[in-house]
Image 1: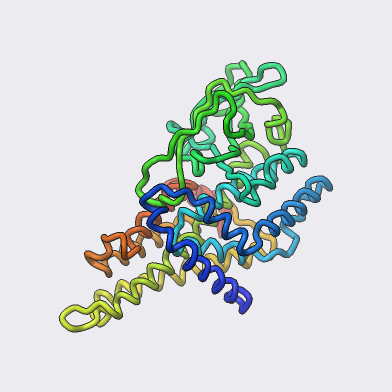
Image 2: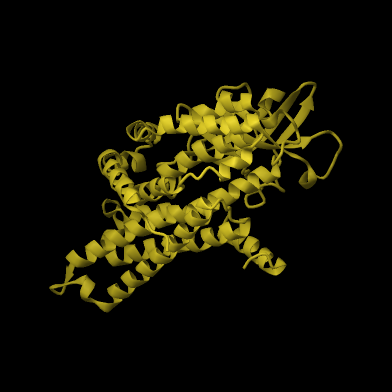
Length: 407
């Protein structure tokens, strides 16, 4: 059975030390004073040499793109554990930091690297991968929500050699601060074709373009360390050089690109959930040992023991799910959309349930920010919403079951 190796344990120890020294002291500012997370993340990149690693990884991707051997990305023998360890450890203290990081270096840069030409990769993706610039991935709209592709109304109209973009995006991670925005839009070719059947095109925009407005950050229930905002487009003119792949028919483009990103997001939520669960278990066990009631530690009481036991069952289940995903990734496998939905549905619900139980273990103190389970509970709640709500995960799972595509 898969488990962390000695090398992995050493990485965990180093990351935890950085979290304790460089992130925890800033939690209050991240949570309550709108401190943007990017300088903290850049310092993490500097401390662990991640910028140099990102450059090396980018160069390999660029060479594969030029050689036309992009499938080699799944055969390079890389260990996904280090990335997931960072995910888990950041989410023990501030899931919002991980959300901002993942959207910029994963969704935004990843989409450019997958769909873009070599020139587009060099123009935009490298700076996102090194965190020299911050990226946003803009697909969701106010009236589409879970129907992100079918209900999309943001339009791209051809005008000579250019496109004119109009529309609105919402709930965009890094939206208020992004330097680079990967944006999805429906092609309006003037044919009057049904909106749901139109091509989905992917563009790259830069902060400050005429007609592009990045609204101020939204006030949210949780994940305050991850700035979220709206994006407005009013006759934004872009050349074909900003259309990823420089064609309206890129391989794996449009709808398929978005679906592939949903798979990665949903599998990643399981690792995020594990970090929240592990921290809630750690805090609750420690509190149960030291908080006394009727001159006894509350851990002596069976109702508290039941909650702790349930929390540990959830922790082991989600950890095993993450470990199975690592094993599969090492072997070059990728989960289907439904399999990723299984991971996300169970793990996100488990994280919310564990965080809620942690508040009950802490009692009144659990409702106070200083004891941290209050923050973790708020941060966990969005895991059941973004990258597809619980209800959309159920739809994806059930459809594959009916088709007989799930084991």
